[in-house]
Image 1: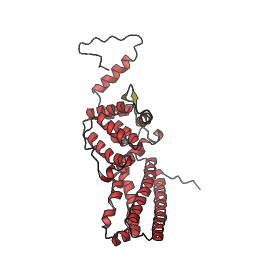
Image 2 (image 1 turned 180 degrees about the vertical axis):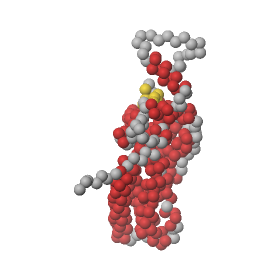
Image 3 (image 1 turned 90 degrees about the vertical axis):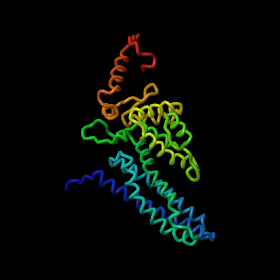
Image 4 (image 1 turned 135 degrees about the horizontal axis):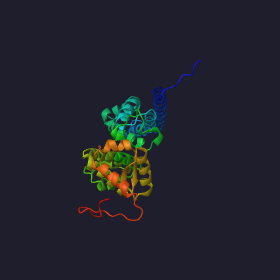
Length: 307
C-alpha cells in the first residue's frame, strides 16, 4: 500500500488543533488553580482575582500566538497581515470561553461590566500583526526562498525597514525604538499613558504600529532613506545590529559601509524599477570596485559625497 504524503496544509491544521487544545487545557487548569487559591482565602469575588484571571489569559494567549505564528510560517505564510487574522480566529473563541466560564460570574458579583474585562485582551489581539512581523524576522532563511520559479512574495515581507523593526521590537526596549524612529525621521505621536506606558513591553507594543504607519505614509525613495537611516543608527548597538543584519540577509538585503544594499536581483526589480537611478548607482559602484590603486573622476558636478 503506497505511503500517504502529508501536505503542509494538513500538517498546519493538525498543529493548530494541538496548540489550541493544549492552550484550552492549560487555561482551564490555571484558571481553576487561581479560583481555588482565592476560595481558600475567601477572596474569589474580588477585583484581585479578576485581574489575575485576565492577566493569566493574556499570558497564555501570548504563548499560544507565538506557536501559531511559527506554525503558519512553516506552512508557507510569509505575510504578517495574512497571519495575524488567522491567529486571531484561532484564539478568540478560547478567550471568550475562558472569560465566560471564569471571569463573568465575578464581574457580575462586583457589578463590573463584562465588557470592561476585554480591553487588555483586545490590546493583545491588536498586537498580532507586530508579533507576526517579529516572528517572520526571526525565522530561518531556508524557509523563505527568493528568486526561484513559482515563488510568490509580498513586497512588505521583503521590506528592509520592517525586517529591522521586527528584530528591534523583539528586544522589548522602547528607548532604542524611540531613538531609531527619531534617526529615521519618522513623525508620529509617541506620547503614552496609563497601561500603554507601564513597561518597555507595553510601550513597544504601542509604538511599533505607530512607527509602521508613519513609515507606510512615506514615498518609496523616502522610505528607503528612512530604512538606511535606521540601519546606520542601529550600528552602535552591536548585538542587535548583528541580528538585524542577519534578518536583512534572510529577505535579500545586506549592509555594506553602514548602508543597505540589495543582495537579491529580484528585490532590486521590486524596490527599484528598471532604468531608475539605482541601476546607474549599482553599475558605477561595481565599476569603481575594480580600481586597484587610484580612481580619477572627471565631473564638474561631482564632489566627495558622490558615494
